[in-house]
Image (cartoon, rainbow, N blue to C red; front, side, top):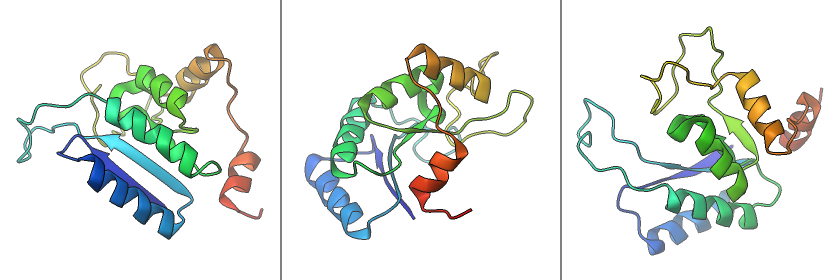
Length: 149
């Protein structure tokens, strides 16, 4: 089970605390937070995007509240450079990886118009290694999720 928050849409500290307490009650395997990105063609397309600072702070709180859970560093919001900020804040799994030869799209796609998106596995692993990190194995991931193989 997964639970999460969307920040940047008028959240205040009180509503965030209520949401975090609700997450703790549900005991999910993955907890996440993502910054709202206005999307063309939606009622909020003209809303000014807020900074990702709230997202990074909430990731840090999630890491303290859920030390053994998966917390995504999504490539959807700020690509591979944003992944670095999120991992440094406490995230421990990279999501929205898209193979370079794929026509797949992510959720927010801030980088849709960029020539080189760097959301492929090779780019992610290269960036992790440049940060002094190594990707976990599939068996590590299965263990975290409690999957018996």
